Length: 314
Ligand code: GTP
Ligand code: MG
Image (tube, rainbow, N blue to C red; front, side):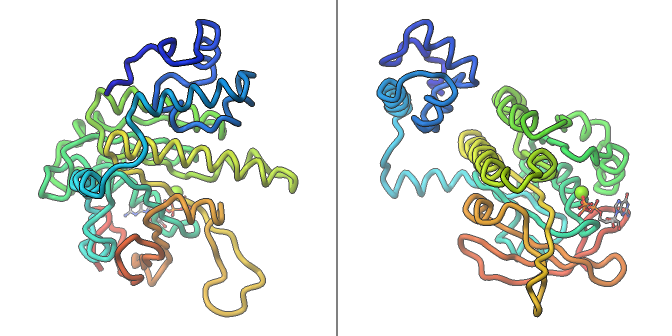
């Protein structure tokens, strides 16, 4: 894309300003176009009026703004899906995990979030038409639970070359929430050059919960999470990749009936994730996937199993 333009070519940007912007991570037009003036002012001490000028300049350069429904429709035609390994889940969510959107999976420990992530990291590498995109995967591991041996096992069960599968998964371990956000923004480079179809963040919220523990921290945590989700959504749209995030649940002690759990992050995730799946345990290997939110599919449930071979229908 035309992102190659020098920041200094934007109105209101001199050498000094360009340096400041780059230092704060605004390396390309898209990151500026997606920024708010308040955020730029806060980070760089550039004046409000100039910040607005820069943002508008970047948006103009990228030709952002209104577009016709036909164009939107054509962009949507590029949307493709990655199979979860379970036909039941795939049909529940409309064919699989979609590119250009964020899909969230939430559930308590052992419900299968990480296993589903591993399966998707393998499946994205299958051919188009066979449940994959013939592309690789970026895996941001925030809980130190990425297990190459398990990915290998799933790949073998799929009849794929396990070494090759591992070679196409770009794993980064995030040590804290800021690091997680930096890694996300650094993914651009891999997404531009390595033919990636899926970005996984497992889990989205763990580090944020650890870093913002005090009562007074909540607003800041939500603000950061919101920023992080925007960054992920940007990756989804700019590179036509699927973004798959996992999330823990917290118990709601005030709920007397029904399921007394809800996803961490509250309304922020509600807005950011186009698809939300809730996993819970059934008997033995059985798990139940509930579609909670989707742009076009009704709510519903699908049973599945976690076996040696990975995620399969019940
Ligand atoms: P947390 O990250 O702790 O919140 O849990 P999670 O939802 O990510 O659970 P995860 O996907 O790690 O594990 C779900 C279940 O998958 C486990 O309870 C096991 O039953 C099963 N499982 C995990 N690893 C393996 C494995 O290597 N082989 C098989 N057959 N099953 C596994
Ligand atoms: Mg997990």
